[in-house]
Image (cartoon, rainbow, N blue to C red):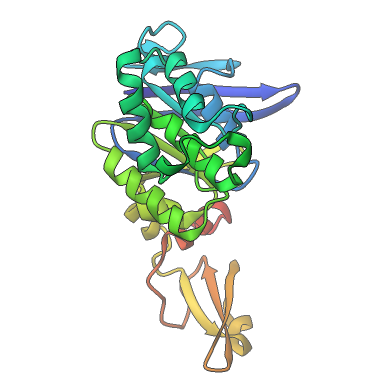
Length: 282
């Protein structure tokens, strides 16, 4: 569906993306990386907003800037998303329908479906300026799914959402994912684990990993240990303390270690696999 080929992007003298190669089909991908890793730049290139210095992006084997269907099939939620403050939510959605060339006869139904999916159907007549930040974020998700888009690029979609709305978002993704390519950019590992089929790890503009969530977990097999704080210095070789927790009055360190240790290793999580990659412990 989408192929990213040898993509590089620079701003002034700084190269932000380095020869990125990806092939994305109809499934849900998590684009995982720290702030500043290059996630937003990659998504903006894929949306056609940035012109790369090198490489190309294809949609159904055709360059996106030449494709007649790409932008009609695209649903995009930017990281910094805003709406016209004086419009009602329904009016704003109607405006976006016109930008997407959705037939006028279908707009009302599409708007109702999209707002219902994000639990905003009862806010349709409210002005944008009266909505909370979390509601505006949900409205951003709604506009991205208007018209049955086939490609969805969502940049930090759960930022500002409370726990119940994060669950609703994950359920919405599960309902939408059939026959769609959905790319969710985030630095929150739990979001990827909850609703993504595959994960792409990017760090300092380089793709470190592209595979299933299970494959990413497996990177940390025999590298995860939970050790009493007093014994943590006995871990040999390269290591990283991932988490400090208190259990029954005692302090424990969850440690990632490059070498096998004389302790029982723990079952790895997605976060363990991710941190092994970015800390060079894989």
